[in-house]
Length: 62
Image 1 (cartoon, rainbow, N blue to C red):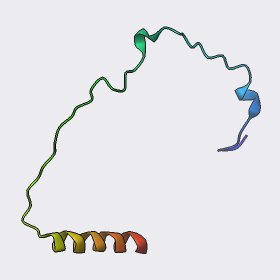
Image 2 (image 1 turned 45 degrees about the vertical axis):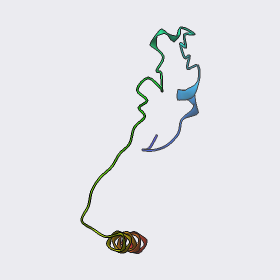
Image 3 (image 1 turned 60 degrees about the horizontal axis):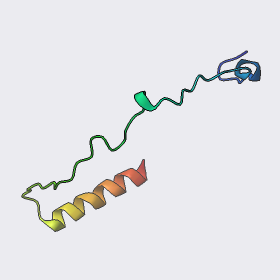
C-alpha cells in the first residue's frame, strides 16, 4: 500500500478504554484570569492603520 493510502482493515476492532472517572479530566476554566492588558506605543492610530493595510495587502499577494 502506498504512502497516504487508506486501509479500512486497520480501523477495524479498535477499542477505546474510556473511563467515566473524572479524576484525570481537564478543567478548562482552571486558570481563567480576569484583568486588563495595556501597552504604550509611539505610533499614531493612522500609522497603525496604514501598517495593518500593508499587512493585509502583502497577505493577499501571497
